[in-house]
Amino acid sequence: MVREEEMNRVGALEHMGVHFDFVEIKDGALVPRTHYRRRDNRTAKARQLDPHMKGVVKKVKSKRKPGYKKKIRQAIQEDNRKKRKIEARHEMRHQKRLRKRKREQNR
View 1 (cartoon, helix red, strand yellow):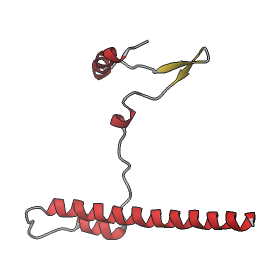
View 2 (cartoon, helix red, strand yellow):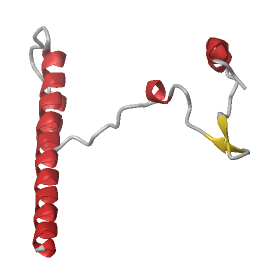
View 3 (tube, rainbow, N blue to C red):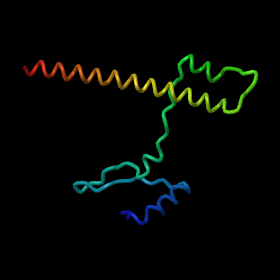
View 4 (cartoon, helix red, strand yellow):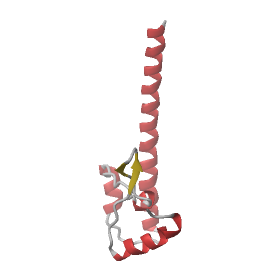
């Protein structure tokens, strides 16, 4: 059993390469649980770029202006934001259709 005060020691040991399996006691049995730093250890998913965005990234420029990498990064973020917005809109419409069908069945 590790108390909250000892978690910084556990973190130091993990940094040195020691592996810990975190478990909880539930109903008298040891049950695996999530890592205490699961959110910190998470890596972002890399999305595939569409052909237009690949062209923006790989385009060979005769003169490189200050901040060109930042502009590329911003263009990719804007494209990802638009895609997420479209996906959310499709999901909302799907949920709306399901609710409508459910209401019609209850009548």
